[in-house]
Length: 191
Image 1: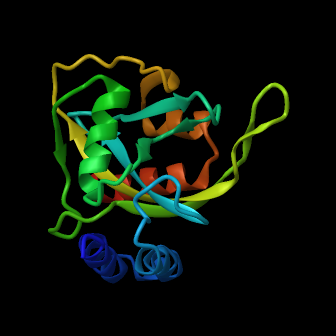
Image 2: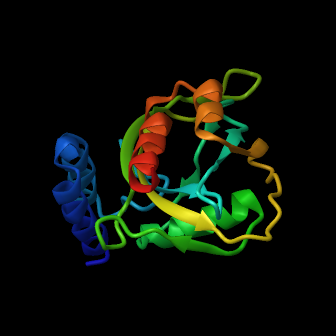
C-alpha cells in the first residue's frame, strides 16, 4: 500500500515528538481511511508537503509570502497524487524558491518530518461570489532542508515574495504558531 510509507514516517515522528501524538493520530486517521488522501480532491482534507529551508550557514530561514493566503509561510504545496511526501516537499522547495540543490536534514537519525500540522484552508469565491474551492484541511508534512550555497532565490507566481529571515525577523513577520514552532525546533537542533 502506497500509504504505508507515510504511516511509517508518522509512527517514527510520534516516537521523537510524543507531545504531538494527537495531530499524528489525526493525520494517520485520514491516511488510513482515505485511499485518495494524496489527491487535492480528498475531503475533509488531504496530504500536503512542505519544506522548512535554512541557509547553508544555518543562520536564516526561507519564507514565502503566500499569494492566496497573504501570509509569510514555509514553502509547500499539494501532493497531487505523489505518495512520497519528502519528494513533494523537495519539488515544492524547488518550484517556489527557484533553487535546485538541497540536503534533507535527518531528524533523530532518520528521514522524518521536522513538523506536522493540520490547518483549515478557507473557501475561495470568485468576484461574483461563486464558490471556487470549498473550505478544507491541509494535513501538512514538513521536512527540514538546507539550501546549498551559491544559489539565487526567485519568486514564483504562487508568491508575492520569497526572502531569507533571521530568527528575530521571522518573529517580526509572523505570529503563525506552526511557523514559530518550526523555528523553535530548528534552533534546538542547531543552537
